Amino acid sequence: MKNLLTIAFILTAFISNAQIEFENPTYGNFKFDNLERKSSWVMVFNIDSTITAEEIKSYFTKNLIFKFENDSKTELIGELVKSKIEPSKYGYSSWNAPMIFENPILGNVMVEIKTGRYRVTIRNIRYINNGISDIILKPLSNNLPSSKGNEEYLDGSVTFEDIGYVKTRSKKVFLILDKYFTEISLYKILKKTNDDF
Image 1 (cartoon, rainbow, N blue to C red):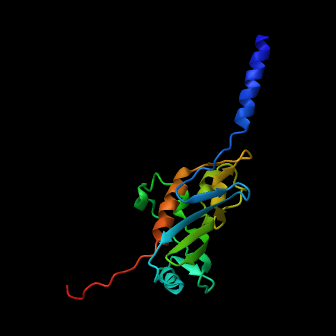
Image 2 (image 1 turned 90 degrees about the horizontal axis):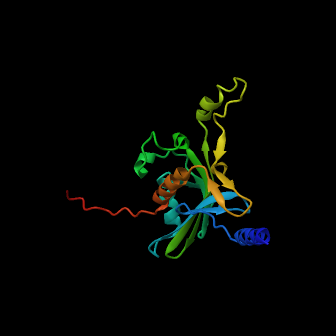
Image 3 (image 1 turned 45 degrees about the vertical axis):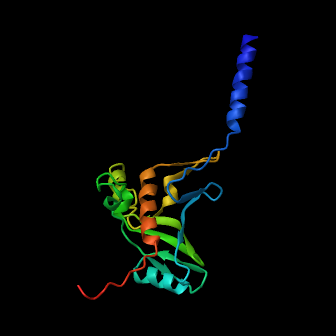
């Protein structure tokens, strides 16, 4: 009887745990899609209602932040301009930062514009491998091909579990990228100063 109660207790605990819904982690403004097994960065910004789509496009293009492929008043589609991130700007020393920040970051960008706000979505976030992983792999075999020049997707840093949640190998990568994307995606109005100094 004692064994039967123990088994019933274990089965009840197992079934109740199996019904728990696991939430995806959030690292700043990153979203994780279990179904498509992709990660993306999404943020909404409030702006003055007089600012137009042309002004937003001009700002991001002139400041070499985004490169757009279309001319729409509601949705701009393009890419991040290839750039390297300095982790020290976001509170990490260069020796403590993940190695991917030694490489330029790339990604697909969509800016959706409504009166008084815009939303930036960055998908397919990737970096160009500078061959740093070859240092680790080459001692194993001289016959391994070099990874230098390959585009490595950030989705490779994410493990999508079948039970509905996401684990990441490096939370630091997402935290640094979140700060960087927030900084570059903010439309900044430059105020004209008085010429008298």
